[in-house]
Length: 163
Image (cartoon, rainbow, N blue to C red; front, side, top):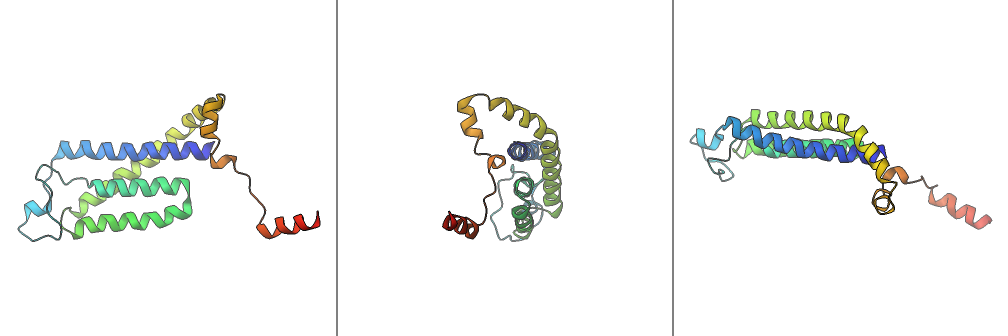
């Protein structure tokens, strides 16, 4: 149950990171580099009211990578560099400053870690309570916590032949 609860909490962390990023953008209203400098950029410059700081792309990609890391460390280790590439690409195409990407990554890290840490225990209790109801139990029963490790295929075949 804890594994599923951690995944749900990490998902809420991703949502919180995005919402926080949107609120901060409106509060600070920083123009993008493509409006502040007279340089040609690779990508078209977004509307002037689509603020720069923090980068939503960096926030969301790092938040999702951290949520994946919370669920599966092997996949998370692969997801984190991809999130870094997304952040780098935002600077490379000229629609963000480096500090926009850094702020988005920091915001995502704080949101996902804090909400996952704080949210996992109450969500686990809620899921345990939901298991008392057959309809909800069907939905929750697919949790990886319920899987039993299976012996390797060659062992199962050998034991079937001897029986």
